[in-house]
Image (cartoon, rainbow, N blue to C red):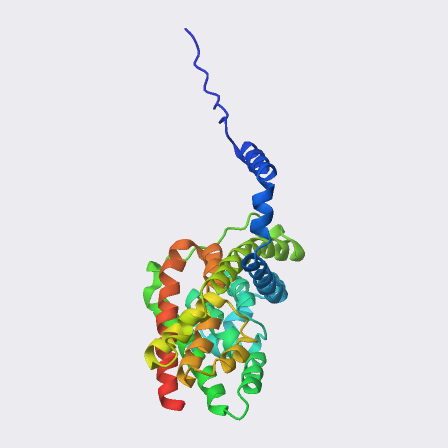
Length: 321
């Protein structure tokens, strides 16, 4: 009886063949490629892409180092003493604790992952993720400097950002197990070195940071500014436009206040929406959270954060500005 050959056949076109074909196409069409690469729009895209990555990378490094420290050195007992056992109370405490992490939103993603690995309830960790980039001292100072004399804007930003984080945290708590949050399994985590864990997290999160930066640079380059200017005079449309702009621009939370202050054609409430939405959720963060916690989680989490941030900012603007 003839024995069947069960060895899987190699596909004729694999990854190596695709790379070779792409290289051949570039060589044959180098004249057209050179013209495309010499365009003003592409140079602008490259500049903005590099700017986003360079601006974000130091904070990502700080975040993964802190995450590795939490995962390796923070005990469950110490965490229980710092955070209330009652998750309803743990959410606002975690939000207020965000004051202690001076950095942008890129650092908060790996830190929140590290906190969950040490036993912190996921709702409290996600509250910290949302609050830390917007209520830390560096952001408060930069906002005060950008809006000289407008102390109401500083209070409105901190208050609206903290309320947004707490409300979303309580929503996560109410969702419970229905919130499809996944954490990447670490093989032999107890045998990992400190630097090994930090390098692993940096390479993984950095890939999604690059993807988000590419998308943000593309939108900032190819979407005409007149689209934003056309709605600046309308209160609600202006706020929604700046909320969308904050999502796609992916600015660092420590520098976005200066951009908001320069948007003089928009109302203060619309600027506040920009300042609250950006640190809570932008296209870069959405990409990183998809990689860290799963696409199913991000598909549910991202829209909720955006809606809550916009509504909270509009309410705070109506009351305080």
